[in-house]
Length: 469
Image (cartoon, rainbow, N blue to C red):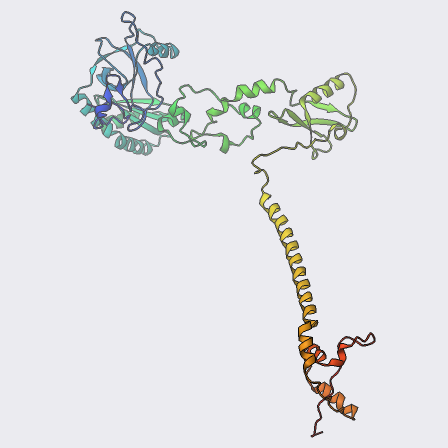
């Protein structure tokens, strides 16, 4: 037998060994979870036998609930599938709440104990089979009902269809903006479906609760999970919270204003009680100023001149109250720009150092500067080392000098008597590196004697004699 965990009425599901005397452990998790489920926080408390509560709460399709009396003292628990009294016939539902908490729910919903119907028995296999067959036909019946309503030209929308447990009655839930004459519609429905027809009009919020869905916050709709009563929401709620009147953002899936706008309204009203009126005007020496904006969290009010509303000036509410009291005494306040105090920058210390987006760029820039300086220093050191090496090369060692002094002196070549030919030969002759000049000068013993008037190794060698000249 099914534990009744699925709202679709599929009795093929079974909890197996998880089903205990206290009910199914996965009542809210296995299959499709209940809508508007109630947490029984008194389930662990044993009630005294003489004061035992005989009322239970039974859930039907979607969010429809009702209270029944356990006349036959049947051992019931959350998740039990029961057959209850209905008109006409009987209906099949799932027990959603038992114990003393049922009386609290009945008192909250103002349900009189005199009109409570009774529970016949636990649902047997035949009751479950009829219930399943009726539930399987609901989707096709809804589509066919919409076609019939469209053919008759009625401005209505069939939202949901619910069969009674014994399939003796079908209820059509519809939404419409205006009054609908569905006398002909009921005749067509009775002829098409061969059962008793019941029409119930619901609002757009009840429709969203039955259909369900995901809100803009990313969670399931409040009306289909826990919200049972729908309070009216008007545009003043958005104005108190300083929200822009944008229907696309403030409206929910039902097309009405979101119910969650009422959640924080009391906090905003409590905070706004300390604020001056939003229609406050200040008489200054420069002209009249009016309130243009209010910040509830920072406790500030923005003012601007009537003649020049481009420049805004924000003040604390305590200062605004003093200015209003000064105006009541007939005195004008200073201009807004003089009243505006310079804001002291607040130096915040971030231990994680993640408040600056460009924190990595600043470190990179400093590293680049250090790298460039290191490169320049290295280049200068390399140049100095090269210059020192050249100087060392320009100074022949003493041993080389001693060895070369032992060599016989080379005979000087005869000079060319023609100086013009010498200049031409110097132009045509390729220049020898300076190192060769240094070695040649070192080989000449005459250069070893110090001569202060002599230039640094700029002696020119005589050109070779050209016989073809």
